[in-house]
Image (cartoon, rainbow, N blue to C red; front, side):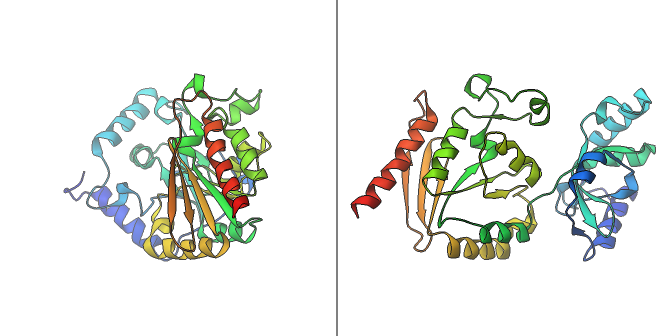
Length: 296
């Protein structure tokens, strides 16, 4: 725990130092992401940007102890505490960096439990964003938050699930009307960008929306990571986006924010959240922009 220097804390610090300046993200092929489902603990590396590795926070000994008890109690190849795979990102020169599941990894180290179930994801890197911008077809874009706006937990507010077996692959439910809204925006000449702080693979998001015949132009996953959200990275990304897009429209649950990228001026429009068709309310706002441009 924080404030108590343990042998395990020292081990984490040494691991971080050993990989500092050496470990870099690497893109995993679809074959690797599909077939590699387990990895040994020594192939998994702690994430220096995670609170688990922060000396001021550190590992939670209680949580680790609970996972240890689960392993000892079940003594099976798939203890119940490990039904959810550890989410990892492939790195060079070897192995995978842990994105979610540090405490399970720590418990496995203590008990010698191997191998661990893993899920490999390809997160958005700065080079990916640069390529997405270079591939842009329009000078206007729309941004949406997958976690807060697009994905929906309420069954009554969601689109019908995909047919089997795709409903077993893509488990998140999409808010009703979002596919129609994205088709509308594409026809209006907007590039579509989505972002999430969660650890989804770029390929997963792209493939999911393809089932709705929607092309996503920009995908930013794991956006809470310091490697992308740092001050210098934000400055570079903003300049890159401003050079490509004259206008950005951000769609939230109850507002539409229209920003002119060259001047920084913006307009905010309220979405009628009481409307039975949220997507229609958003479309009506976007249509106003087209009417204004025709008058000018």
